[in-house]
Image 1 (cartoon, rainbow over the protein chains, first blue to last red):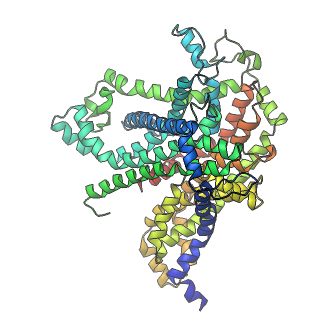
Image 2: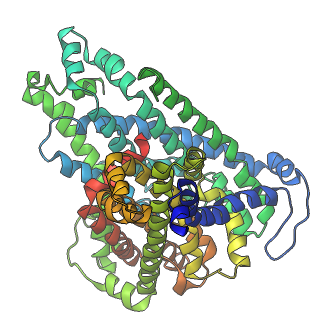
Image 3: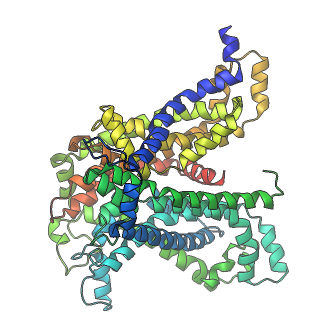
Length: 299
Length: 291
């Protein structure tokens, strides 16, 4: 009797789902709901909250620091993702050529991606040091500048510096996933294009790019998700400073909720990121739709 | 940049002259490798540089004249770095193990048992994968606190699976899909139970997928930051990334040698594991994106 029940796919299937379901429902779905609820309350650490409706959201929309954080997050995401994509695609195309030691290069390229971000951010922090920066040292020796650059102390310089650190970490992800996409494109297509006498640019525009579009859409979506919700790089390099000019939504919500104790307000800030993330996911969804259409709609 | 646009023509590459190949391939590739590797070089050189050389503007900063192990000694014997390493190791291994076990069952159920609603569950798992930790950490902090797990390793061991299970389930689903149905049907006819099929047929065939998911989960938990920062407060319970960032920085005096030595040692475990399983790692990464 028991063995018959256990061989029933429905019973066994749901039984197999139990461990994942318990962990995910309790530590993912429930917190997501709790976060939305907290966003409508004035809960503080150690204090019971009261329902205040859209109070947090009204306050945050009028708050100049959270407006700045939203601006910074969008700027950080757009600039970093665009540059990561361009450089990653270039690197992928370089790696896609017949090279000796190709697999060695590929392993080396991924290193920035696998090392803990907090630790590589410490290395960047040291390279951005206002007194002993190696970058400034080189530029001074070359005669390009006369004073050590205050990388993380000047508002726009700090924004540029954190974006560069983010790009450094993100290039490998783009390069390796796009390389995998490039390797699925048949060389015979390029041979055919060459026989037709296309220019290198036309070959890129009309052969490589269309065939790579699905994977570009997915890679970009993941990158936007990661970059938009990035936390550790900013936390290590600037903690949002100078004067909130590198403050992101995530670092601000950490500051308000954990350091400041305003759990409700911090949750509202985190919840405000969801519409942007949904937009990125929908973008990916339509990218995948296009792939299905290209294949003849069989998937 | 336009010069390199033709770079992917594998079939026609013989038409390119050697000098042209240098300009379009080797030099840009060299610059990329230099930029991507320089921070690691800088970590290593700083970690071995005596404090007196670190505070100099005059000498060449790219080389070390009198290498020293002082920073490593200081880090290992006078800070809590060893216990951070131990905590990170325990948390990473435990959460990887939990997530792999849960992921194997879930992936097998969704992909092979095809119970009613399996497709919807698969989609839900995919969406769970897209929920970033930085929007969950505030409510999770309050849950962890109410469960009495605050400031313990269990807080991390139980919360890391929230991003590891969706990932490993998704990856393993792809591997299980590639195993032919006929093998299972034969076993069913021979009277094997589902459990026997899973343990004796599917799992041995999915070993590459298990390794991929395992090392991916391990590196993800080793690198995790925001949960470890929010759920742990006493310094001997911290993980390496959080401990390095919050404990080793005292006021305005930065001990760069120690910081870089710690960054180096803290990156070493993932780098070693990665170097042994590069191919699995790459296939896991590209597989997850392609699906």
